Image (cartoon, rainbow, N blue to C red; front, side, top):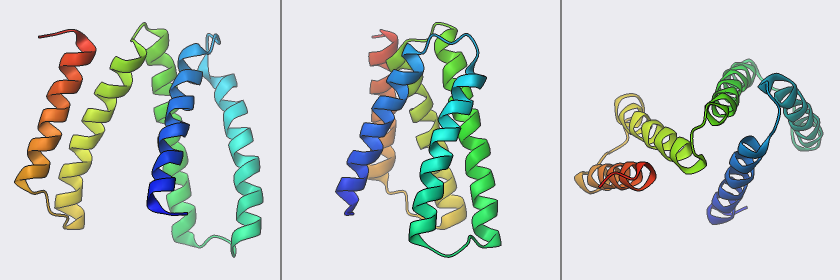
Length: 137
């Protein structure tokens, strides 16, 4: 798949993800997450079997980290939405904070370049996102 097709996949999955989280009527995230991880596990297991060799130690460590992070994200959004946060505000504020953290980490750990233009773009997007989702301004 090309990069643009993969980005469409991420966006579409993100929209479905947030809509499903927000519209879930479960009072606790744990049963819903167990079903979600069961479905994801089954599909990933089939795709892994079709695609490649057994995972290496590095792949196992990355898989554990991703699994723990995904659980934190999903339980966090589930509980955030249950506490009354609006759909757009919760996802936008979280995305802004993640983007800012990743920009710093990209520069500090991976040697990525954060140009003035990109930094200004991130700042403007953050300001616009907060203003538009919180009704300020």
